Length: 72
Image (cartoon, rainbow, N blue to C red; front, side):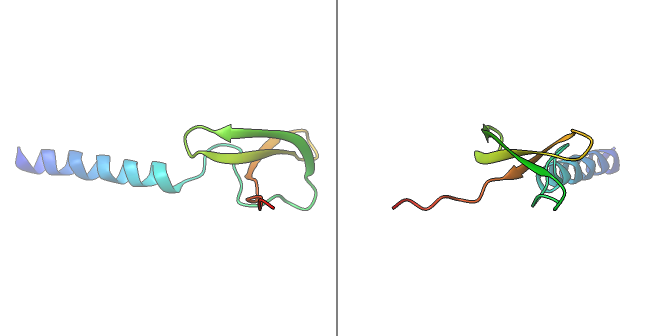
């Protein structure tokens, strides 16, 4: 029975690590050269990052973290 709980715990840990490290649908590190930048920005509540919406040639939306702005 202990082996079963160890396996269950291992699976839960793996799922937790993957959910933190993998990107969500439509999220990218940087925009592709053929994507068009939009003026749409939003705050991603799960990561507290400002994201910009980009559109590819088929009109699909992609979300890219906005570069941090410097205050003057």
